[in-house]
Length: 468
Image 1 (cartoon, rainbow, N blue to C red):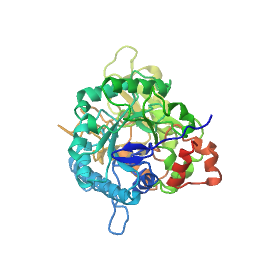
Image 2: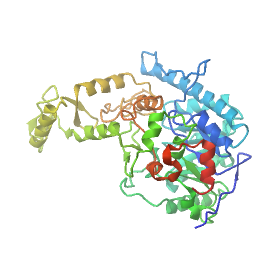
Image 3: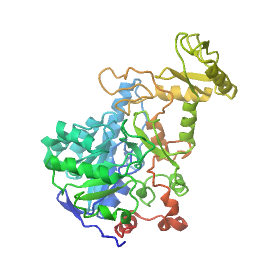
Image 4: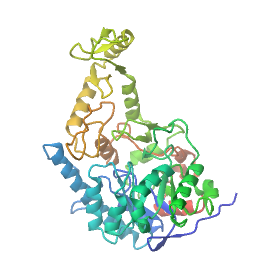
């Protein structure tokens, strides 16, 4: 089938290709990649999630924390976030040289998200065209965009989610709705919006879901020229030919999150880039270990496998003898108020014999068994929490009111700030969380990347425009 080709669109008063670089979390996209994407005529996206800032010599300033309390460290985190995103936007804007457009991306569930967004936009006037935002229900996004006269692009995974945002807030600021990003919850990398009504093991075709989203938008009077951005699972546009110039869908743009990871300008370390070339189908796992409570997709490396194994070494208990819980747990715990089934006690004894000697309580009246070293690391990471999320299951932090979720800290999760900062700055790719979309295995299959070829961002955008 012959590729239809793309036409430029008007975005924020400028002509750009309807190609958006995904804004990949902590330092996995920065000024170099997003500035180059804009310079190639597309929409580059600076991640404003714990972005790097630089010293006078241009070296990355390590994000170290001096505060004695989580609240103090949270204030430091917010300042790092503002300074880093401003540095990234400023540099990206210079690289773009007036071409394309620069967006910023924030996680609504990020700790201090609103304050960081306001701080960044107030210091980057005229440089940012739009703000993409997901992971949560960002009702206040439109009013923040209006204050700073930038476009806003909510990230949703259903027409229902968009309708709720529109009815509650966005209908008051219709003129600044830049696009609606449909992020496929089964295929996109990083955090996604899989709802409790949807089965993580049964992916749904995105076409009918996007058609419903357009129907919702039309009912609310939103013109077809406002694009829906297809995000998640997009590799080459030839496979999306039916979506282009399709009257049922209206204007469509495409977001690329995974492919730009393997470019010259991509800031991720070389070891991460090399690992991407080795992935097979199924090597990216949709899981629920994130302390946000959201589903997310990442490479099923030893780090993730360890979290899977930890959750499997888990048994329920009751505080009193009841039902089948007829025996007391006699390993891994102190005290006698851990009543379990006889079968689970045998399993626990076997885990202890294998070296998993420490039982840690979870918020769900279960205990998980870990090694002494793992216990020490979990407790230290919880102690070091700097409040990087608005609600954190791992540390029980909340960024407002009484600063606690009121739930027990969950040892089945992990410190997401620590691991994402580490992998982005040269840490071991086997020992950290490596977010990726479910199409990442295609690096190994696509002849474009054969013989270890790594394109520039411009070469990648040019390639995408051919349909491949």
